[in-house]
Length: 179
Length: 416
Image 1 (cartoon, each protein chain N blue to C red):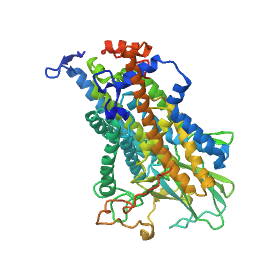
Image 2 (spheres, rainbow over the protein chains, first blue to last red; image 1 turned 90 degrees about the horizontal axis):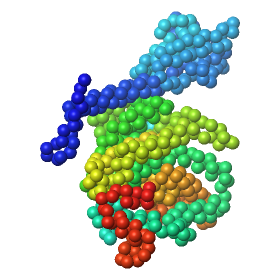
Image 3 (cartoon, chains in turn purple, brown; image 1 turned 30 degrees about the vertical axis):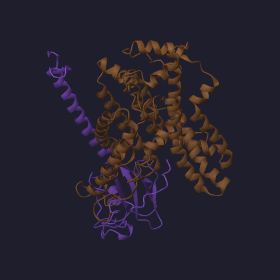
Image 4 (cartoon, rainbow over the protein chains, first blue to last red; image 1 turned 90 degrees about the vertical axis):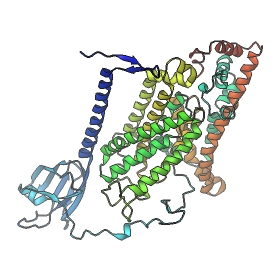
């Protein structure tokens, strides 16, 4: 059993905790740091947002499903694949999701769980593969022409002069933001 | 009395003598509540109430609309205003340094958006990232304020400007170059620096919408109010703890507290750290409700509006309660909502109403500080007259207090 001691400091006269208390304090602080990292990791994994493309387009060896079925992600509002719609998207949060496909030929309903890779910002779910049970139904989406649109970019800041450091080009807004 | 003391910037414990605030507190304790004293003590609240009642009919806004706006704004702003209570409790005045916490919260949100962490988890992520930064900022602020005892408010205000420069340097130059950024959507086209305005789509109103209650057509953001209620409980609980009692003692008289063995500087630093961390969370709650973030100036007016709201609610530099927070947020924001429309209807220009907002904000802070200084001086004069041989009970109370300067509880009942 450790002995908790306090010793007065010679220089300041203040009471200083003994080694046992100092060790315990250090352990608590290290524990708090570990909890902090664990919470960050937990929130990152559970809260990471992904764009899930629901796809019914023909692929190599895969025949698209007949129109008229509906797809629901995590019990959300179903998306109807009809009138020529062969791809839609859903914004999801976290890695595991339940996909429910209803209105298949014969009134069949398929409900399956999928996993999205943590690093995938955008993933594509092949519904024909999911219904047929072919793995992997979810793959990373790589856009064919991944070129950034220059139209969406903001003008560059002035690179010299007294206003160079100001993000709004020196014209700080005189009107207060509405609180 | 010193100039600083007249400006209401001196905590009671800043002078080894019986300070003006202590004299005033004793006088207040002894003098009966009259109509005149009631009006003097609540002048800011009464002026605001009168202005609001006058402006509502001119604005032409319906009562349901105003109630809806108030519900939104109570959820949005109350947390930030509550963050100001503990430094007042510790005798450090209004913490204008809370802007540092707001910047920390914004950095947390930038990372949440960059890493695409959405929903309530995104807010939690931002809060976790912001917490160590705000603790560090609060520590720096506390240490600086300890070097400037008696001038905490103006020092905090200027410190916020200084740290704002560092924040701009980090966000404008380091993010994307030194600090890796994943999302090209938030980085400027030149490859480093964060864009002027960030779309907080992923976390927009995620706390407000987490638990909503439809009450007579009004959507009540219950989750936000629960968080605010928890903070109120925390503040009440904290005041009863050993540390809370230490803060109270430091707030009353630093020298007496030091003599009693309380580590004054450490206690003051802790008060500022807690306030800064709460400001960080408050800014995250504020921005999730707004849905977008002006990266470089969203924090500029945070302390300004929070302080104005608290003062409108009847608080002063030395005294604030949870009730002051809610009264202040409601009164200030009712006037904010109705003044532009009233300005438009009265003068034909909405801009007059917009300027009126700014005028109100600065005006209420100035008015409150002037009234506080005037009241303190007047009551101290009255108490001193009693000491010189008058027969007032205030004088007797002060005399008793002065006779035993080591008594930390001498004025405890008067300053709560």
